[in-house]
Length: 157
Image (cartoon, rainbow, N blue to C red; front, side, top):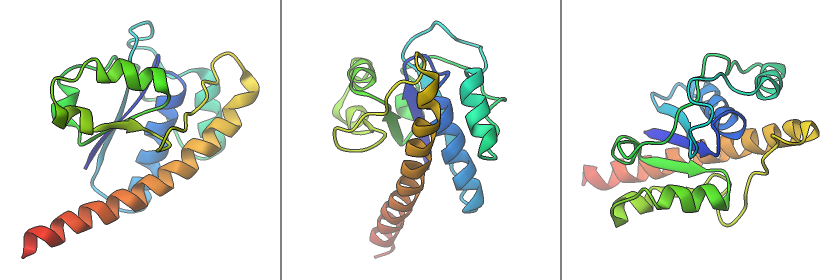
């Protein structure tokens, strides 16, 4: 399983999603690849925002090794799931897709129409954003494990 988490600049929300998923996947003993990217190119090569690093560290997750990058067309072939943080990210990522198979990989991180608010301009949002992302990361792992188990079961027959 390969999952890409995407936000605008790849310094706040997607690094938190990357870190939470990577942490929980590791705890579960799963051999999944997790990465993150941004739709914009402003922060390429930069560490995550210091506030994102701090809230992750407070919760025993280290995201300081991550470096921002911009989503690339190749990511649609490399990743099974591309999870975006808000509607604008969703629209921007869909513009990069070339076919229905690629479009089917893209969905909102929280599912449905729910969006993760961007905490960049409001320090007070980082804790609630982290909690929202962490909780959804647990749900995603559970759901994707069931889905991948279902696929394996189908192929066994």
